[in-house]
Length: 277
Image 1 (cartoon, one colour):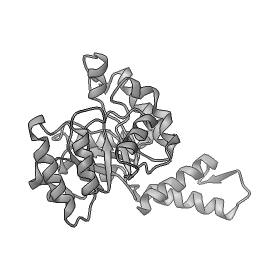
Image 2 (image 1 turned 120 degrees about the horizontal axis):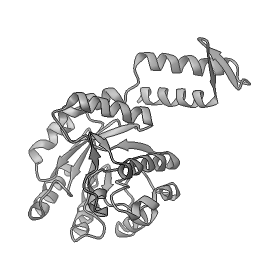
Image 3 (image 1 turned 60 degrees about the vertical axis):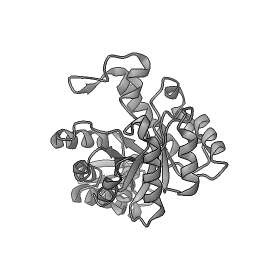
């Protein structure tokens, strides 16, 4: 399953659920955490439960509240009755958080997408996700909670992440690839700046991310475009794979005057896998 775009929808806005599901996003995330005010949590859970009880065509996750918070037990009780396709775990701190979640779900495992960089402790656990033997959809990260947790004044200067936040992004990327799962880029907060979004998504793809979260349906198209290989990239990848298939014992080949070796072959296969959906 490909996860190029994952669209957030506030859990207390059920009138938006169907529109989000029809947006072209590969997945929607029904949010019970940050986008829902404390007094609206119960209403959001009811709305999410009603939606999950019906038919759905789009892969649907639910972002629960943090494991150590007062709303988590009610969130997990909802998931036990109306099972989504997966859940998003905020404030995740590596293998220990996944183990604790498994205990709270009484072994009824759901595929999990952790938000893996929201606390200082989380930064030291990003390699541990590779040890999890349950279903792991990928790893993603966030640029908002961590600055607050460490007392930083901002996550960005002149449109660029500050060094501590850039480090968190990089470690999340490496942690995902170590675990062999999707590396999901964080949201682009300015929903009106589609040009900026396209540039940000393209940077994420170049750096090794395989998909990205969205805050608004208008962001889905540019994100899908950024994380879908184009015709030129596909043709190049096909040529590399075909050349090595024709010379199975070769370590290095020349294609169009350029040297290619095993890392290029690995990249080419990854491009074709993404293109195939």
